[in-house]
Length: 244
Image 1 (tube, helix red, strand yellow):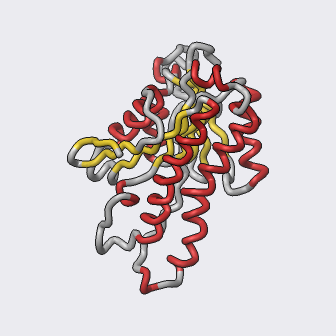
Image 2: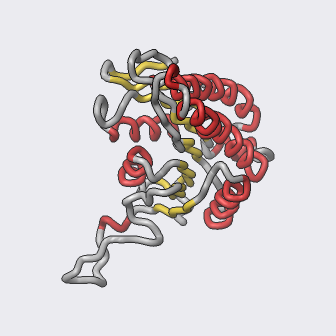
Image 3: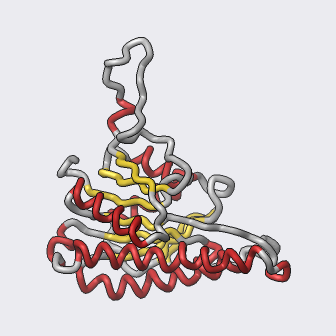
């Protein structure tokens, strides 16, 4: 742990956005990368680069600071374990990025699997960010208002432009509804968590990398983490960026 770096707990780190954030900012933050099934392809405590010609030589690619944890975040015990391990190792959490996702798109009239996926999508996109944020508040943030403000502690919820706009023909009804709920949840969280000195914002990117570079979305997270915005939504799409 480097005491000069902020500690960032990033869920959904096995996805392209989490992986990109770790690659771009692993030297800037102490990142705890939480993943479910897919291991993030970045340097962690379990994997690193080796030069086959000089296996003991230090490599600049290994300078990033990523600590990986595999967990089922919908399991209460696993969720608490993630927070406890992070605090035991790094002694604090300065940035929480709620990026865990569960997307399933299908027409509503088809019913079936779309209806079956509805609960998981809302649990992952809405309930989980609230549960994890509240758990960290109970375990660490609640009685540290001045310290939270000093370290500019912040929650960044990863939403989507699909939670703001309707894209006909893509079968995004449940996904969009869950992201719209996350947008409003983020604004309410910004209002309530402000009382303990923690900011909350949402990032709503369009599809990446097809419409915007994944790097743009990762940089958006960093900007929200370092800014003083609270209770806002930053939209990133082909027309640039704008705030809600």
